[in-house]
Image 1 (tube, rainbow, N blue to C red):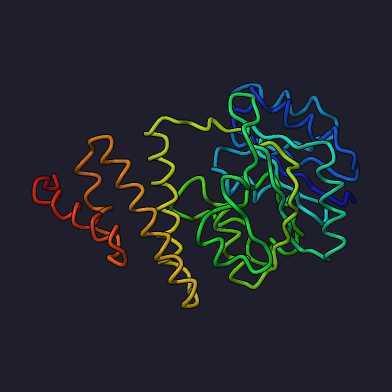
Image 2: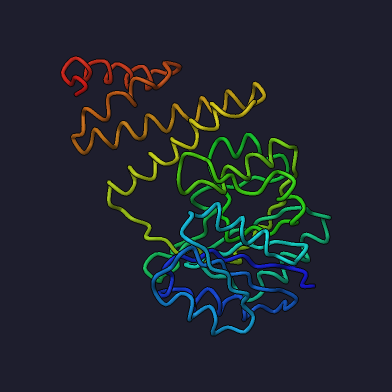
Length: 294
């Protein structure tokens, strides 16, 4: 049995899958298997995956990321699970360094820093953009999402204990955030290794519509957490604070694009606990006088 199962979900990933797989094959730690779940690809993903002898390849109809990762968990043989998205990559010592770190701390789950890459160029460390915390991360996690899934290694039994990824969450792109939150609510200690051991490839878009979409998806996740989980009082207060901040930021961005009808409800939702928030709420009320819902 391998010690580590590397789970890679892939959907039409032929443009970058080779890079991800090569980064696993190049690891200085070699007691692993690669579990690649093809989520209904129609390109050359299958051929690329099968060209690597280390890969155990599974195909399924398209079912979205949570179901794809859960299929990987089901098929995994290792006691430890490492996640890697098909468009990201690891540095060669990633598993060796992280597993030694986890052994020292008797860790059930850990994550590391990662480089952020834009258009093939490293533009900084993720921790510079979103500072992480470790140990009891519940409040920090409700303040901002700081764990990138391509850095996580966890005991398979731990992930199974909370049911893996929720396939029924009503939002996209933050399904892993939901899993970390459920683990934190269960009292799990998260250990953070302050070394960039992966490369997170993203567009790093400056286009304002992309930033708006990102904030909208984040807001959907926060609203779901607020409505769905029994949070302790301090955590509930943190969610409300983060919702206020996110609504304010989203409202401002929509205003800057002249999208007044969409901006008004976000600005009205900002709680009046500071002068800035009072101004934002007042702006939302004024807009509502001129912009009526369709």
